[in-house]
Image 1 (cartoon, rainbow, N blue to C red):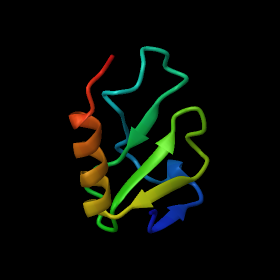
Image 2: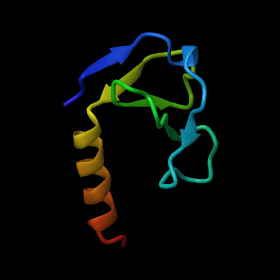
Image 3: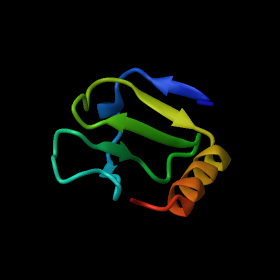
Image 4: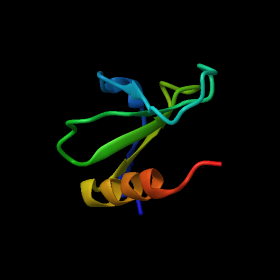
Amino acid sequence: MAEYSLANAAALSGWRKSSYSGPDKDSCVEVLEGYPAGVPVRDSKDPHGPAVVFPVAAWASFIASVKATPTV
């Protein structure tokens, strides 16, 4: 569950695209590492829109689950 959200994700710098995002630059999830309150996540199609900030432990659990899931 998300800890909170940021109204304007563009206020933060250093976003990177998820390695699981497809080659289409318009359909990506971006994350920001090193943010003290957690892990912000935003939609790259709306960089000035909101970002959801997940607690570090929840994000780490999500990433571990994604990596453990076999691809078809």
